[in-house]
Image 1 (tube, rainbow, N blue to C red):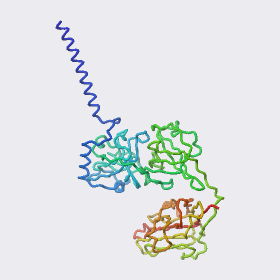
Image 2 (cartoon, rainbow, N blue to C red):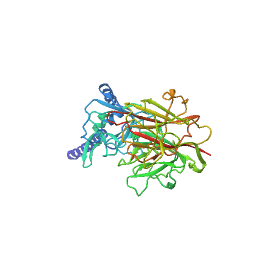
Image 3 (tube, rainbow, N blue to C red):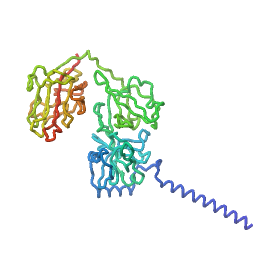
Length: 485
């Protein structure tokens, strides 16, 4: 009998022991942070304490300053040793699977201008770093660089690795995430930056943007966001009517996204997405956080017929004498320095023998040259559509700039030029790396979004510095304002 009782007691003890071990295992597992963990949306006491310590003992730097810390791979990357941090608002989400072990932070919840990428050994990071969350990153001990050599996306990483192509940053490990990436209790509702395709550039990578009047290309009807023959990503062409032609940009969808098999919408409307780059960094693309950000239920847009338009105003500059430019309603104004726009006969093979408007700071004797060339007044209320078009060229690969601007509140007086409101126009201005003999078409620049009396301006910014780095030339020809007949 004793043996039977003893046996029963021993079996019961084993059961209790196994049960205890199981409970302990569950408890331990729940405390281990791995790739599949979920973090409560509320910020705990420990996180608050770490953030308070960071703010009290470190200095905030801007995202622009962080980007300047990357040396471009010329010398080995080193860990940041100073007590500094950068603040931002999460602009991307991996909740739908379209982003992987990364998120972007932008500098403001509204009217953002710049963003940074953060790579980390964590999936489902949206549980912790949700869209719009205010995040502070302690940069001490971290690295600034590229995740892939030459892709141009400046990234915050936890370490570095080097191969035959160069040195890149690696993902933050779990301890670095806990100690270096701090949330505040604030989650803002992000207001996407309103842009057109032509305004999207590498400087906006990581920024949440919205584009109106867009649709998927005509040949994509009946297709899905992801092409099943692809392995990782599929690019689908978005288009927008820009007068006589389409402007385009690609939307990239991951094979891991939960909307990959959804049909592409066939209407026209708006899309909100994160500006990103392809894996190799060769092209700028858009990436969705969610299908909720696609609203394309309207009627598809229609291109305009060039035969329905004629010039309201046209300037070829052939009627002017060389080295002088006054008359025909143009304003030629030097804001800084004494050099103004001049007329020259070009010998460029792309426009040989034509008289052109020309501005350059070389030998001006002024460290700063700012020169305005402003069109005659344009009445934007007399017709429904107006487009500006011109060709342009430049000399010297340097830091001089040419801005294309429009104003509807300038009164035509030189004294009020700089105090008036001038808005950038999305024309194609020749780049520094274009061969100097070539001439570049501006494309059709739509003015129909403006009203009243308008002026279009070319603003040259340069100078005659000692190293001749900002004294390049810009040239304009065949300027016209097209209106519907």
